[in-house]
Image 1 (tube, each protein chain N blue to C red):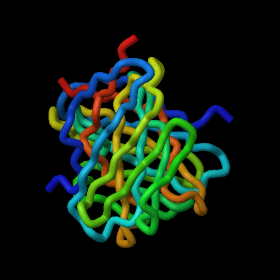
Image 2: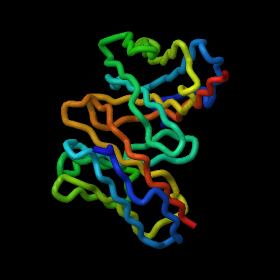
Image 3: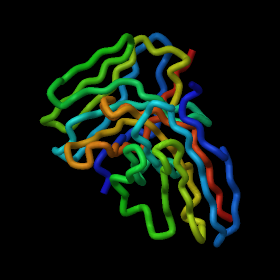
Image 4: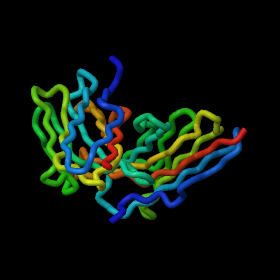
Length: 113
Length: 114
């Protein structure tokens, strides 16, 4: 059972525009959500997170939005830069097994000059 | 501190052989995690340690898999009698107790079973 889903395997965006990556989850017990970024031949790198008590968290060019009623979160990158080209994973964890992260399948973002 | 270190980076083994991977976490991190990632999928949780205690194991971790973290420092993940389905990237991560689940990952060990 895929509890965290990223339905877009890939996304292509022009440099300077907004990139929006989406993630859906099914487990209502999840209370913390994270985005990780992965370059080839490297491990995932933590990007930004949000607690279920918030609906928005911003860090520089990156903003994560959480819609609990829809069980949906999104990552906005504005403006997109070539160095943002990578695979992005959303992840979730819950009160039970709180240390375990459940990851989505990832979305490959390509920023075109 | 150079981050989370994993060794080897790549391992090719014949089916039925045993393999062992090592992870050196960030020195002050007391939590250590193992994940497995297959092609086109996100990382899947295998197990985690708090200091030397193994606190949770996934059902993905069959009897052929064993993980240790002696003295709460480095960790090893051993796979016995490897199968082709074990081919994957094995990722190690570490974190501090107070960190809200934002781990630091290593670069992983890519296992290919032929």
